[in-house]
Amino acid sequence: MGFSDWPLVIGHRGAAGLAPENTLPGFELAYQLGVSGIELDVHLVANHLVVIHDDTLERTTNGRGKFADLDLATLRRFDAGNGSTIPLLEEVLAQLPPGVGVNIELKGSQTAEPTAKFLAAYRELDVLVSSFEHRELTHFHRLNPQVRVAPLFHRWRRDVWQTVTALDAWSINLSLKIVNQTIIEEAENQGVKLLIYTVNDLSEARRVLGLGATGLFTDYPDLVTPDVLTDLSLFPDDNAHR
Ligand code: G3P
Ligand code: MG
Figure 1 (cartoon, rainbow, N blue to C red):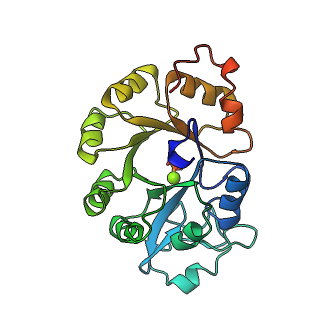
Figure 2: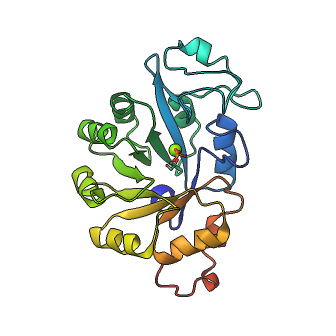
């Protein structure tokens, strides 16, 4: 269960295609649908880790503009969808069912330190911390080297493997737009897992798993399910996917 599953099916921002993203009901739906783990994005507001993707309010709430300087009470008055508030990280973790993994993406600046401190008190969690901000992730890793980390990449860079080594990364989390056979083979040689975002189509999901990816992030954990994906008759070579 959790991050030891194969294939790893991670509910992207909960179940972002089915319920308001990064909200408690969205995460709850993902658990009901049987995900291996959920993914969420954190920002720091008034010394609290809050779960929201953008650094502005308008796309996902009824508020407007940047929220970094708001106090928590004001932030929590906005509707993040169907009457839900923007959750605190601790609220999501409090309702996380046993055995379900959580991927915390450090989205906002200065999230490494509070996340590292916070997780030090939650040792039993099955957790992966990721970020596109590799400096923030490096800072996190120095503070809490016990927790698995994953640098995120939306385009290929020559220093990917250096980053992996420096972070002792558990996985690299790559955009579906850039993944290819060579990258997957190199990852295998480096002994690092590969998780692909965001895969909302079953044939794409089977393709990347067939190439050797370990798992994927999906907005539709009702469609892209471990059961459907592990129907081995659908793989051309059933040895090539772990
Ligand atoms: O971690 C995978 C994915 O969440 C990265 O992109 O923009 O959805 O946070 P984004
Ligand atoms: Mg994310």
